[in-house]
Length: 101
Picture 1 (cartoon, helix red, strand yellow):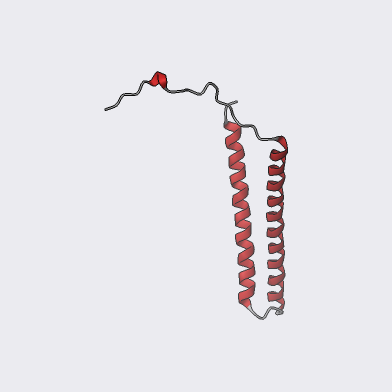
Picture 2 (cartoon, rainbow, N blue to C red):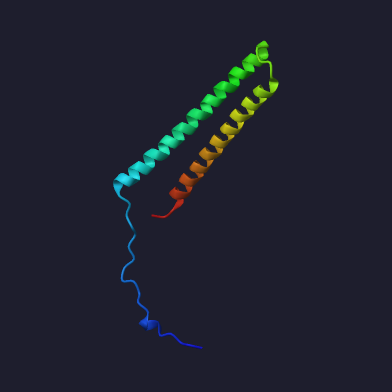
């Protein structure tokens, strides 16, 4: 078995953390905000569409109940996804706040 002298191994003198540029950080935050706003907007649109489909079904204008059910289910799944995303973001925020400084 070959032995290795640990003193001969080069150790890093300092460990530096790469710093992201402020512009890059702002771009990431703004793009995340845009994605979040877009998801909320799409969820709202699906909810409004589901409401319209339900009104049409109630008044007898909708001929195909399958389309109504599909629209309502899409809106429900979209809302559930958005709520889970909110829960994960709140959980993430709480975890960061628990970190020692």
